[in-house]
Image (tube, rainbow, N blue to C red; front, side, top):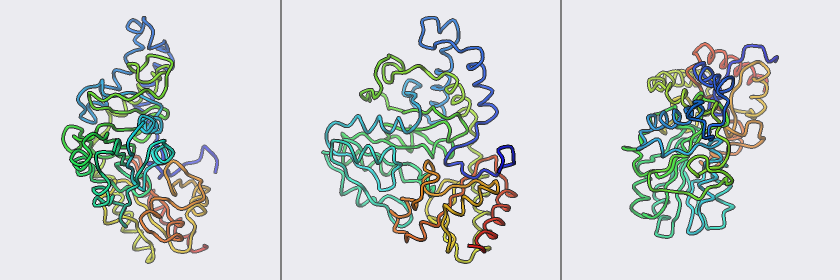
Length: 374
């Protein structure tokens, strides 16, 4: 496939295409307003405006108390690592299906940790969580929506359990897949969330920028030192073009898009079931992101089939949304108790408002043709 050929892109949980309004918002900071946003002259050059616009837009998007609650980072991976590195005592609690940027630093931390299992639908075992919470817990970190299956967790219920049974613990939510797909309200449903990570490129913003929300009164020891940027919380020259893009992406999110994506996804899965009698759609009975379908076809290897489809200009995901090309089954499916060979056959379709039913029909035809030769 040549790079100038038409591509059907169905891997939006991995990354999304920056919207035209995002690119337009970034251009002035790349071309004209390239000045140092931390300089004393920033108020005169306008270089300090992009960051404030991004903070304002994220506060509106997430119903945060104040724009100052946001510290901007290179993305959710950095934000997640920052949260994990802040724990110097006590016990860390995570789920069995966390993104590697939470799981790996948590498991290698110098403090103890507990891993909470999920059920066969990928929902956190609340009884196991309840039994694990006590006064020694310093951090509970839960992924809001899974990147592989799209299943989202009962964050409000988990938050109440943390507040009741481990009241001194920090409750962190990795909302990377949730932000920009479903409504997030930090003042109502998620009022017990203390910290929240996000990345702009998951909702049609640019790569290389994201951040961490911290509820007022909560401070973490900086992960990156050597500068007073981000109110002293994170050193490094402010990425003004990316922040301008983040602001545009956050301001441009349309809540109505979730309903349209759910209709598109459900029609695709209905056609999938009609075409393939032995297909397994994972977590179909659990609450899921409206754009995500994770399924396994019989007698195939997901990575191999995805590679063949990519050669035809159809891009979809396998395994973790940030680990395309990895030759192993999705760890989330294994944690759910899915058979190894079924997990190894898994493919993930994750749509955006840019996708159409005709594109999904073309995917179905290619899946059928390729599966017959498997």
